[in-house]
Image (cartoon, rainbow, N blue to C red; front, side, top):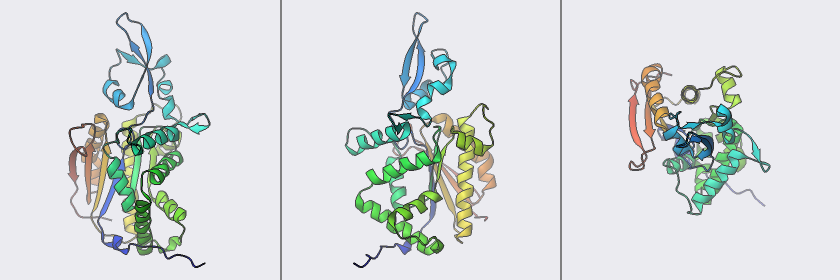
Length: 300
């Protein structure tokens, strides 16, 4: 039996260089994971009170009425770390539940769900940057489940066609043909950052026990991804303007990222166009958009 010829899209060599950074919770998916808090009642007593990530983004500064159990934020966010429940990683369990509900039409998708889907189909490089504490490998497995469950067979074949085109034009040394190997090549060129994970905090140079800061962690992850895609463009001889989009539903994170881009990244990477999307407002399709431009001269 002869091998079937593979379909390759060589036209990817001519397309623009647009890359994306996605927050996960309430941006791609509305996850069922809960944050465990205590709430003050009118009689001054405190009772257990579990909330969604969307609710927490609103109440997190209200320390008079909400507190973590035993005054321990790690306890509050215990399901946002790599633990197993019933022999399954909690993040993979909740991702599966969220995706299955969207596919079945039982749950609303996140504001950047469609954009992430299109990014995968086009085979564009991206980063997942989440305040969660999961390892890069676990987040990678969650993206794998998205690819296998959300994308139709035709969309997966188009993704593979685009990825093979990229490899043929810019990475012939990869020398892989099987579908699984092509997707692994793609994963290896993306970034998966859980900024509260021990793995990521060690990468930042934080000592164990140091007080974490998700906003600083996301800034570090964004710079890492920008350096990554510029390095790849340089290695592949792609001297074109680069655009990097960042989307997040948390207003505090978005404001911090906007300020960071304006004060630091736009100067350090003057040829990169940065686009920031705040996606928490349901009345704005695809989110509020802020464009921060460099000098539009790609300095590799």
